[in-house]
Image (cartoon, rainbow, N blue to C red; front, top):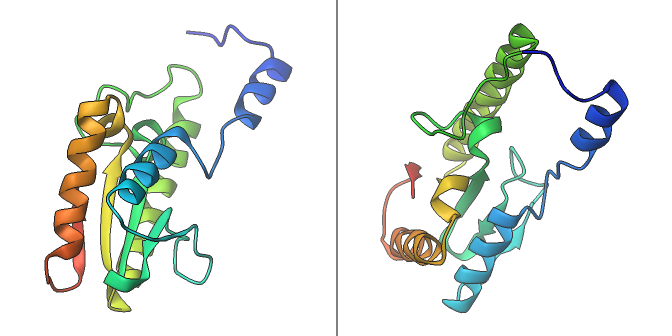
Length: 148
């Protein structure tokens, strides 16, 4: 299937995709703040520049878009029909970069959590994800990775 947009239109749309302060990040940050948690945002001192950092709990949270970070089994994680090879390489690089960031944080003694965009689509899901994350933060656990 061919792209129905001109290259200029596609470029304009792609330029609007934000890398920080996305809606999923904002709703999760708001929910965690209401629960009394304080955090840093996009801490450049840490590998991978996590979306949300809880220094007190030595925990880093990545809020991943299902499309860009290839959420397994998610209907949002589709592959475009045109220029498929380009997109597959792009997605593979994203997933590999995510793994490197996660491993570097864990090696530094950080707990790493991933929250997926599709888990923040409704008020009920947001509350559930925030409750799970809060529970994980308060639990005394060794370093490692967990999906919330």
